Amino acid sequence: MLAKGAEAYIYYGLWVTRPAIMKLRIPKKWRCPELDLRLRQLRTKLEAKLLSSAKRVGVYAPTVLYVSLKKTYLIIEFINGLLLREALISKVLSKVEAKEVVRKVGIFTARLHKNGLIHGDLTTSNVIVYKGKPVLIDFGLGDFSTTLEDKGTELVVFEKSLMSIHYDMYEELWNAFIEGYSLEYADADAVLKRVKEIKMRGRYVEERRIKRFRR
Image (cartoon, rainbow, N blue to C red; front, side):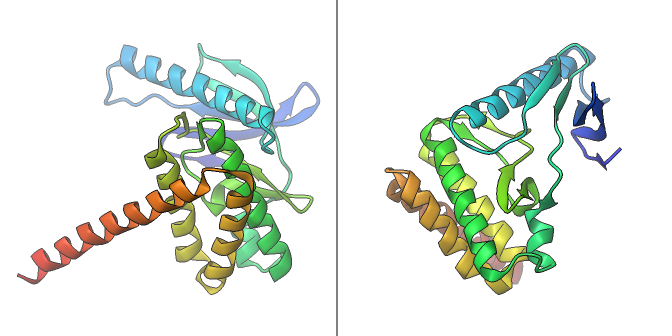
């Protein structure tokens, strides 16, 4: 076992003779068993579709090798690289290399968005650096969507991951991401405008909380 999350367990092994990852969605005991199984099946099927669709539109992502809806698990290609989060923290990448990898993440995100795909949890913990290039992993919270709100929220999530963990390079990395995103996506300006609106709403809510706390 590689990881034990709230939604799924991740295992490493071989698929025939190929290194692979099994993502097993686990039952939620507090849910009705029939409903729980149905939801896990839907999420498993959706994640497989998102991974395959991402690859078709030119995004580096693991190949889906097998899907079991009955047992709610995926077998996907094992990417033998380093999480972008760890690569940035450990300074394995030079500043130039880091900016180029994040710029490419911006390009890949744009390719997803202009084809109606949402990753759902775009952070530096869900990008693997493999041979100097980013591979997007874990589409478990993703969806098919064309709304500006979903696209804008995706970018806000990625920006927050840079700001909170990689604050020393935050501005340079975020600018590199936006550069790649804007280069690839003709509607980038509309999405970036929505990003500003989402962040303003967040600030408004936070200010209201602070005011209530001080009363």
